[in-house]
Amino acid sequence: MDHLRWLERECLAIDTVQLLDLERYMGIVGAGVRMPLGEPWRVGKRPYGHSALSTAAACLKGFYLHQSSLGINGELGRKLDKSRVDRRRSFLGHVKSSLPTNPLAPKGTHRRHPKMLPDGARERLLETVNAARDRLVVTWLADGGLRIGELCGLHLVDLHLRKNAACGECRAPHLHVCHRPGNPNRAEAKTKHPWRVEHGIVTGGLIKRVSPAMVHTYFKYVTTEYPRGAGHGMLLVQLHGPDTGAPWAPVGARRMLGRAGKRAGLGVVKPHAFRHSFTSAVLDAADGNLLIARDAGGWASAAMVDEVYGHVDVHDPVFDAALRTVWGGTK
Image 1 (cartoon, helix red, strand yellow):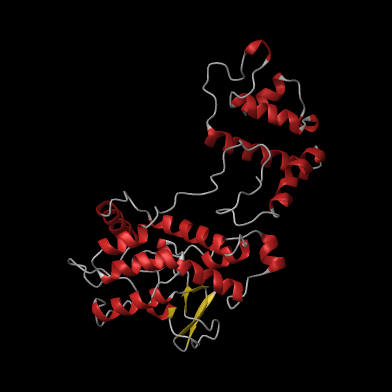
Image 2 (cartoon, rainbow, N blue to C red; image 1 turned 90 degrees about the vertical axis):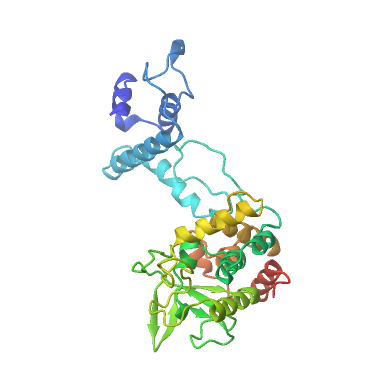
């Protein structure tokens, strides 16, 4: 409604509005552009912040695209829709800056490097934590690039930690990240790749390679701390208190890492920092190959990459070399 009132004030009809007019309006409501005599639009009201400007830009784009679909101001509609095609040329948005889908959206600084772990954080955390389960969490987050929901949502049947597993989908040790919305600990994988269990063997899902250190910490944990007869079949469990043996919720893992980080002098350590550090390390090891970084970390990609280029082969020597470089000399 505010925009329609502004159109009336400016004597602009919907079928004559140009992209420059919309950019001027967005600047005015954000106090980035002033009207004649130095008087901003919406006198007496505070300018929109970044979030409100983003919402306003989305509303304006949707409104004029709808008008274009009705045959009104088709030229403006094509200009607004053009950015959608351009954006398909960029991918791996968490790691590489991407083109905006809306030319009216406020311009903000894209954080190329999200907050990562301090140097040596993995080693210091492993020295600080006491339980084999907690060492598994640190190692799997660091070497697997897993989201915390993916890690806490793993079931034992998802783990194919020996070569040439029965699933036949990856010769190297790996795991299957499966989206299970009904997990008792409410841990849920973000990715929703199709998967199934046939004759007790999991196939499909998001396949992720595992390092030798991940395999080692798993067997240490299972042989020393994992309770016998756990009927839920999930990987991570509570080790103490009245709920001993119950599935471990993501909030418990976050708190454990937060406490361990403070004891190690690292401040509050967040699980997603492992993921960003892992992806950055893979990018460096693979000489900036975005496909390898995407598939190693399980990041989403643009439609063009998925439809035209597909997925990198997990047996590709470059893919294997990049992972082994990131894993280093872990055992």
